[in-house]
Length: 179
Image 1: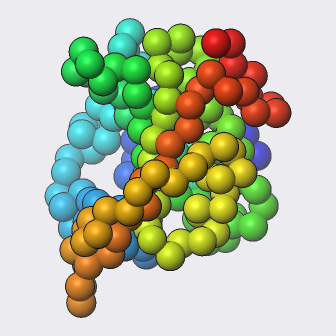
Image 2: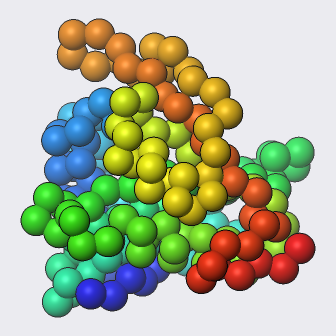
């Protein structure tokens, strides 16, 4: 198993994995499978482009060149918010769950952020009630700071999101960070 930053070469697999994620866990993502399925492959390729100041960086867990898990980082363009990153799009395929891939993906994302001295904190949202995901993030030093009620609409109602954050100048084992 390897964890690496994805390039446009992986766009087809990335699209497939994310469409599966949106379909299997509609309560976990603000995008729906149908709206993302309608986007052309070039949209997915653009998300994976390496640029000097990327808007997003996506990491993948690869098993024999097959993408089995992903996580992303989104960066703010607005001057007053450029010190923040958001962890997005975390998903591990069912057949690969239970092997620590989620932790490896979070580790890769935090290691990347350690190379970005202007980023001071990372935030994320997790579906209220997804205790396994929340516990994973807490192991990496994330702390909840609020609950957004009715954050997304799903069939039959709404789900709330727990907002979590972590300062990056406080190092954790395996993810050293200079202040």
